[in-house]
Length: 357
Image (cartoon, rainbow, N blue to C red; front, side, top):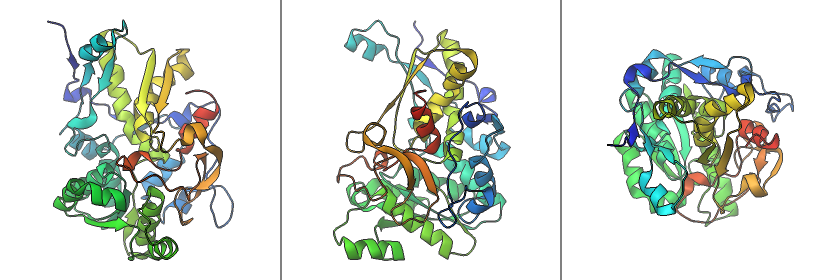
């Protein structure tokens, strides 16, 4: 019988994440401190993120970062995730191509987001943090962060894009089941939310808006840090466990990809799958194509401009060099909340600029 699923044993789950910044010939442009206009240093990020996440964010030299044993232990609850040969799709398309997909939906909350949520919550716990905040669009990241907060004994507050909060009550219920406080954004609980609602009373929310509220709450709450589910380099770093597993699984299948495709919101899903394979293009002369599939409702890679912009709507975050539709972009009120972030991560933006993808 032909083999359909390729699954690694637990002892072959990666012990390190891959940091593509160390191997890039053209390094990403630096984020800028919005107060000084100078390149961001790790200590500039400590107010928002855990110290370890801040240092990982700006690490341009170490290609491999150790996965903490406690995080790897939690990975074993659902990793490795299957690499699946899509025989039915191949037949339906009538294609000679061999199509594989990496199934991250087998995690406890149903997506890849948990790979970074566990790491970020762990680092916060190690530093003595008691509260964490975040934003979420469709709710997958919020669910992952709520679960991770429960695992490590942290209190979590989640701002969910209002239209998704109303359209997806089951996602909200998952977050609340794990003990998170969930607030539709924009809200009247923060200065950023009040300002937006004063200007746009019927604002249905965006990830930029929700980020503003989560960042503000983190800054105003003692012993609290902000966490996020995409865009930043340290988040994509944690997601490379996906591609590193897939690389081994492709070896099990006796194949190597000609094309790697992944959906694109802020970049962590795409980078998590693509970057481990992309390192072989950079270092070994492979010629794999990398395709980021973004929604037409938020086409920052194809229609956005490359320039410095804020990661949120209120200008609380560092200025990020990225392909962006502008931090005031308000997406259509459709269901795909998490894929409608206004900008692309700085690492992915640099790779696109250099025609690596």
